[in-house]
Amino acid sequence: MAEPRVVFIQGVTKEGKTFRPSDWAERLAGAMSCFRPDGSGSGRVIGYSPYCVPRDIGGVKGVLVNAEVRELEPMAWDFVMHFARDNNLVVIEDPRVT
Image (cartoon, rainbow, N blue to C red; front, side):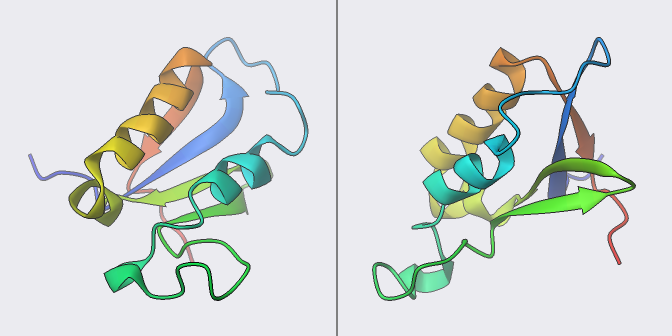
């Protein structure tokens, strides 16, 4: 089975409760903002990394995380995946995003 290219960390726990605080997705994406392709934009531009962005999919707030960050910085990948696990959040592999 192929590794997922993108995961969507939903702002919903496995028990169906909405994750709080309400700006958690922006905070998580902000913490990941320095991880960019080829180090581009590091410190130059304020904004989210293309590897980790807040999104609303199907009415559910969450964070899209591109698995390329695993190659760029494995500890960053572990950070977001452990965040999801530690907070019991639903993680969808390869969500259909249009």
